[in-house]
Image (tube, rainbow, N blue to C red; front, side):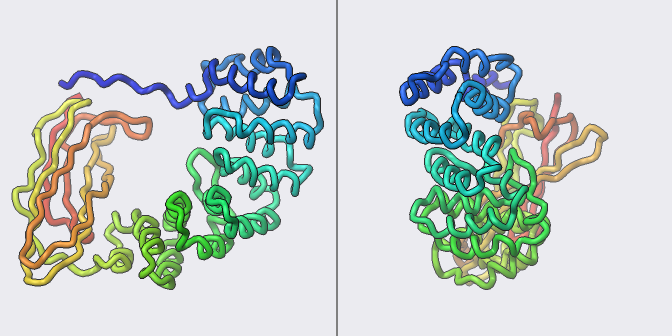
Length: 367
């Protein structure tokens, strides 16, 4: 069995004691009357038990608890604080402040979220306004899609994602993706990769409920633009993994793969948690013309009840010449995650080309 790797610091340690002291110091610099000791006492209480998002919320709550100013006065100080913070993620406590205490001042809060997002992101905070006043908030977000700052443009797409990780779902947008169609259309060829990733993720969210709407939308775009083509490929990744022929056709891989797989191997045959498997094979064309191939693989993970749950992984896209061949290898460590616990048993491994299973192997896991 391989030696255990050194564990990375927990994400929540972004908000550790030293960071809280940094926030207190910088706040005191812009507002000398700031009660730094009271802030630290409030922020550090029970800190060890809090998750990263709870710690972010605690910082904004602690700022509110010790600032003797009204909402607008507090925002003035927080505007000065934002560029002084030494972490973009930490600066997200400032949009959280807006979401928590600024519902009564809608326009002021919209301007604050637009400003704060340039230092980190207001993607979580804006969702509270979308939930309470969808129409007015979306009006601002459609305007933000035209902004010269790519952080603001990204907020228009990311903040309105139906299924943003670490946040609640936006049921009205999930039910009717047309509500954000104008934002996505505006950003479909954005020059910023940061923005394009968000647009692709937004569309991928929508494929979970309205796959045909996404396909209709993308098929209506000109994919000759390299930025739009990039978004299309990444937006359809879930459908491509499922072997959806319409999605594969959009990226030019909808035809049946005229290939054969040779020497499919999964090694070693028996592994323990923490070990790695290596999947290897050769893809060989059986026709004289070139082909675009989307190659994926799946693992049938054994469940606690003895059944299996299949997960598909992206492998690569290949432009294979006529009668050409390609050697493919992928190494994967088998270890537990918060989202997946492994159980002993036979794990099937399947190789798919353009959505069709063409080869298989497997390994036995001992735990």
